[in-house]
Length: 389
Image 1 (cartoon, rainbow, N blue to C red):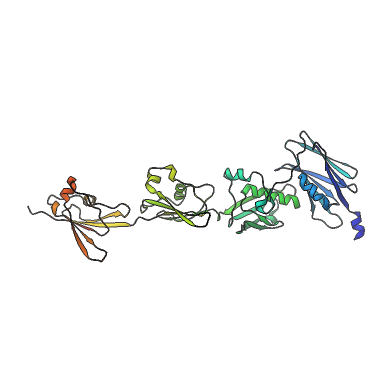
Image 2: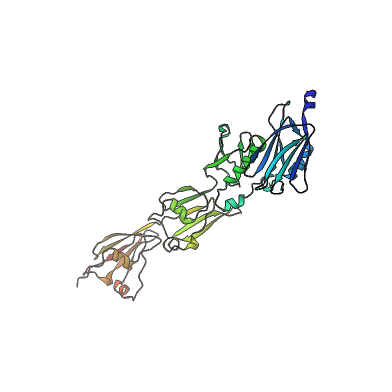
């Protein structure tokens, strides 16, 4: 074993020129190498055969934005992977001079910077542009989402996994990776970087969301298809009611949004249905948040009965949110006959105790505006007697 280790080549030094146009990697013996270019982000990748990296170079590499990793291999023939950021529109030329590899950049100076670290994600490298992509409508992955991951030409890496409550997923080769809080594009970029740093040259990763469990809105009550709906991107109250098939005729005069506050308490927001739907008030068409519940209360029907000297005696239906008046009930019953006694009209109503009370009404005075019309209650019976003169 000792003889084998003595034959291995160590990366012993790394230095860039003051103007950033040249990077020099120093080994303790001549090496064989190959190179590849990768995009998104642009970088040059060097695969050095038979070489090992020196641990003391890790800090310098991180500070320069250079990633040095050991690729899978046996003890006798290790491989070293060196990834160097490439400035936009710059070209790179690699040459060897004895025990050194020289990377020269032309057209633009070499700009080497460490990969940003997102401390909120436990020190995981941040993906640039996530906030901007999310603002542009790219879906942000959340807990309980079911995601499908594919790596081009590597079917063994294809997997379907659900994001755990802590926002992580467990993936083949990579282990536990943070997913929640990243857009689909951002998570693709993260997996691509992780795979490229350890196993593959320029891997092509695609992600799709099969179930949007973290972004759900419930719609209940007087809608055609009550249920729980996936909220893909921003949604308003009217958009979600439309997805639920629209309102039914039993819809009342109000809509309530039940929402959890940051403190975990539930709050109820009230919207006037007529202003929102009929008048189209844009201020009431509020944006929804994941977990909201839209409640469209069913307007309880009420029934009154008109009997006596009307053209169509019988049952008249209305809604509890829109009480029917005595004049309206008589009109819905076809109006009065010629023999109607307007002064003898009365309303029969059951009290809370179950007894019946008689309320006399002078319909002539109401029609002339000398008395107020009265609201009827569920179960009222309007009796219009006939006159005999």
